[in-house]
Image (cartoon, rainbow, N blue to C red; front, side, top):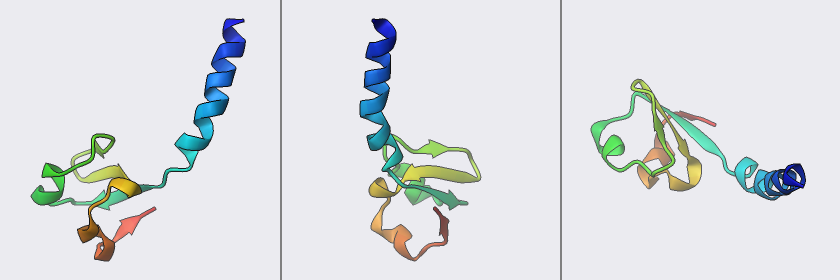
Length: 65
């Protein structure tokens, strides 16, 4: 029963998790670091962040999707 419930939860969450695009921002500035969305992951030299939460200022920046 528990396995069925976990499988159902995973099946319901999978489309939501995979549908989100992420950006890798190389050498982010202090202004970007100060306004990161909660889901962003800061690795020091670069940041992974959801594209939906990216500030408009990144549109002209060089990013990897």
